[in-house]
Each structure stands twice: as structure tokens, then as C-alpha cells.
Image 1: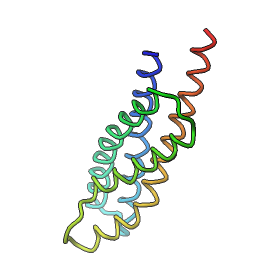
Image 2 (image 1 turned 90 degrees about the vertical axis):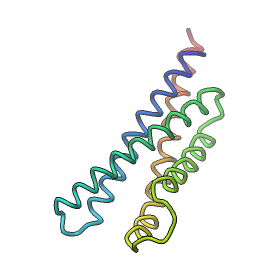
Image 3 (image 1 turned 60 degrees about the vertical axis):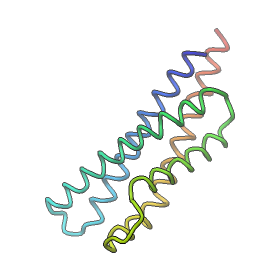
Length: 136
């Protein structure tokens, strides 16, 4: 059981950090049409922030899913909710420039689907790990 919790938590954290970092960095980089150094700097910052928030979300998701095997649908829905929460944490609501509102609208389906994918893959990893532990 301890192996399942550690492997599930670490794998979900690393997987989510990579996926969220890539999605945020690529999305912000292609949002700026001029592909300038400023756009690259903002994309790098967004990738780092997305990776950190993805790591935190993934660690919590992995811990939640590894404590009890609830299935693929629960993992996918948990990841979907986590992706939306990462979006809300990353882009604060308030009166800001219109670019922030456009990014929030553009990132909603991206981060929600990345979160759902991370939840699904974590559930698959845990189910495969559970089969191996149970067979030993």
C-alpha cells in the first residue's frame, strides 16, 4: 500500500507538472504573434508557473487517487476539476488588460483537458501498479 501511495503521488506530480508546463508555455508563446523575446520570456514564465501549479495539483491528485482505487472515470473527473482550479489560480480575476481575459477563455479547455488527461493517466498507472502488487 505504501508503494502505491508513493508511486502514485510522485508519478502524478511529475506528469502533471510536465503537461501543465508545456501547455501553458506553448499557449502563451503562440498567443503573441510577433514571436519576440518578450513573448518568449512570458512563455517561459508561464511554463514555470504552470509547471509549479501542475506539480502541486498532481501531488494532491495522485495522493487522492492512490489512497483508494476509485476507477478511471473518477480519476478523469478529478483531473478535470484540478485543471480548472489551476486555471483559476494561475489567472487571477480582476480588472486587468483584455489580454488576461482572452488567455483565461483560451486556456479553459486546454487546462481542463490536460487535467483530465493527467487524472486518466494517473488512474491507469495506479491500476497497472495495483495489478502487479496484488499478483505478488
